[in-house]
Every structure is written in structure tokens, then in C-alpha cells.
Length: 112
Picture 1 (tube, rainbow, N blue to C red):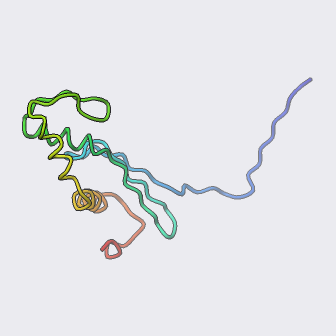
Picture 2 (picture 1 turned 30 degrees about the vertical axis):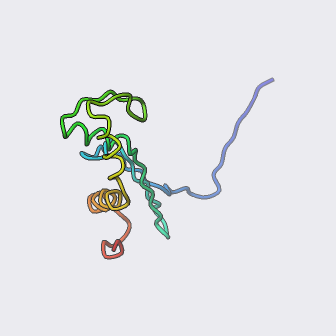
């Protein structure tokens, strides 16, 4: 018995999301996902532990990393202090930094 497969598309399909994969100097790997149609929703995904590791590296502090945390550190209180300093202001700053650099379907006056 011979099998047969047919496929027809009723309507055209457009890309409805764009993802931008970024290696930020302070935050490490992150991505921003933007919907190409109204209401142009956006999503930022980042890892706070990656940010904390980069901060320790900037301070030239020795540490051993786990997949998503720390095993040890030369000054054990420092990773917690660094993690405690990560708040919505820093996340908003990195988000807006990259929104100014990537192509958007929005007018920049709408990003305020």
C-alpha cells in the first residue's frame, strides 16, 4: 500500500515574534523577545547568577561557580551582597539599553 501526503496552506503565515540573543557585558547571556504586532509585547530573560558572576570577575574575586549559583568564594559574604544589589532599576536599565539598540516596530517616543 502506498502512502500519500498533501499539504495546503489556507492563508499566509507571518513571523509574529523576534528574539534577540545578546551577550551583555554586565549581565552575560540574555534575550529579548518582541511581538511584531500590536500590542508589541516584549519579554526580557536574563540570569541573575550570571550577572553576579560577572560582578565578582570585575572585582577580581576568586570563586567556584555551580550551574546556577556559587560553591565557594574567597570572601563568602560578597556574592550575597552582590545578589542583594540586583534590583528592578538595574534590570530596567539593561532592558532599555538594548531596546535603544535593536530594531523595533515602535516609535522610540513610545518607550518612555
